[in-house]
Length: 208
Image 1 (cartoon, one colour):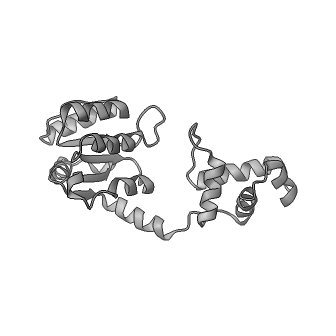
Image 2: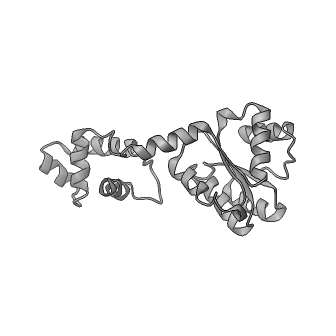
Image 3: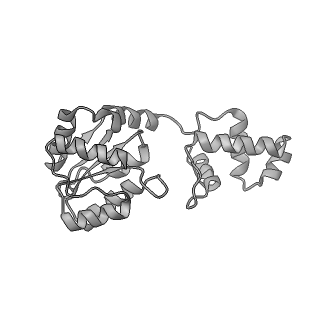
């Protein structure tokens, strides 16, 4: 709530009229449909799970109200999120899009400029976002894994259980669990009720 109210003050000082401040993705979609704003400003991560609710809500809002401009703020460079957001950037009818890191919007003139450019149908990307996107596309997601972690992941891809991996690689099940936890962390697969991290890790292995 403090961050949201702080952003409202920044937007007011930047010369924008804030028609409503909301706390989750569902309310964001409702507010866009109700107010038809020039720009919808959202965080990538919003309640309840703080993963990608803000982005998914922004995309849904643009589907419900075509042409709605979206300015996304994030603490991190999220490659998949930015790619989804920019997928429609080449279509003028879709409305402007922007992706800025939160620590870049402390200067009012920069925030105001971004709002005007996005509202006018333009695309605004933080330089660090651009650099991050290019760097991550050049890097194999499995590059950070150790040789042992690659062995564990490769055996996982064969459909083996932790016990079977333990026997195959002659290590304890506890060691297998530690390697798998490390694999999840390095592949940026946080705990989730909706996603099966073991399957997603294997998919990353197969793509690589």
